[in-house]
Amino acid sequence: MSAERRFRTVVAVDRRGRTIVPVPFDPDEAWGVKSRHPVRGTVGGCAMRGNVEKHDDVPAIALGPTWARVPLPDGAEVEVVLEPEGPQRADLAPDIAAALDAAPDAGAFFDSLAQFYRNAWLRWIDATKRSPEQRPVRIAEMVRNLQEGRKMRP
Image (tube, rainbow, N blue to C red; front, side):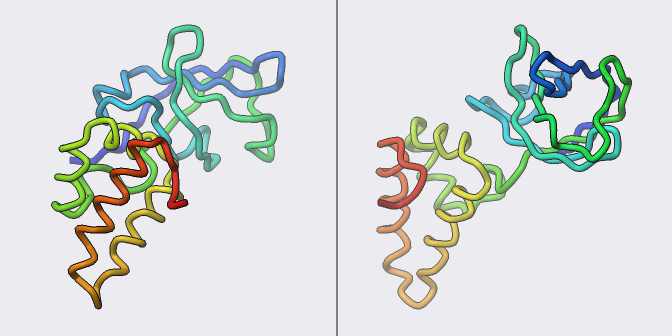
């Protein structure tokens, strides 16, 4: 099952020049409950990365004034393709997923992190190939750090 979502929507340009892209579905239902949803995809054929967040109580993506070479006009109807960015919980190795499931606060914080931070944790854990006994130690350290609200190792 693909996590990709395609839809048409009408964008708005706010007074700060940001392009607001309404999202016509609940990202928590589509991709799991998270405090924020980092996504990548295209808006009107232009590549983008951003976060689905609430704007006027509606899920939307706010793109800065410089996100596209040719800005979209207020009220433009566009084709949008979105998918979650970075490794998702379903993509994780079973031991890492189990550790995050056992510590829901750490799991929720991990899910909210940008792709860069999630990938950094996973690379650090996967670097134990020559010392497999270190893998559970690193997983436990990652969970502890995430529970303390740390995006990366101190």
